[in-house]
Length: 113
Image 1 (cartoon, helix red, strand yellow):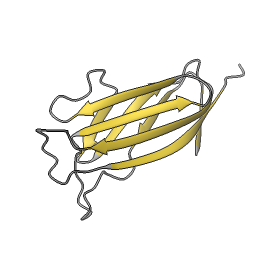
Image 2 (tube, rainbow, N blue to C red):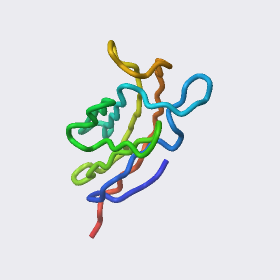
Image 3 (cartoon, rainbow, N blue to C red):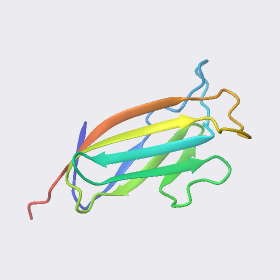
Image 4 (tube, rainbow, N blue to C red):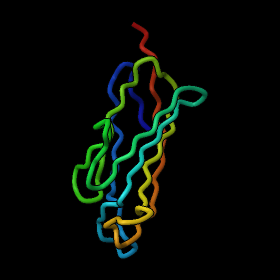
């Protein structure tokens, strides 16, 4: 768990690449990032291979590696977040049919000054 201060931009990233069952780094067809402040606001972003994220929130850093920069203004508290990857329903290029997820939490402390 990490702590940041309200009003900062928090970078949420995948620290280990999405991988196939065999351990090879892969790009899932669809990458989702979801977050929620316990008892408060939430958000969700989607990156689709070939077209990216229309909000430019999720950024691909390399094969299987992504990050999202989220503004924490007016959102102090414990943030619960989740990265997930999945194959497209049809027409995708992820032949390994990756279905993976990683979750965590981050504390956003209110500013006192």
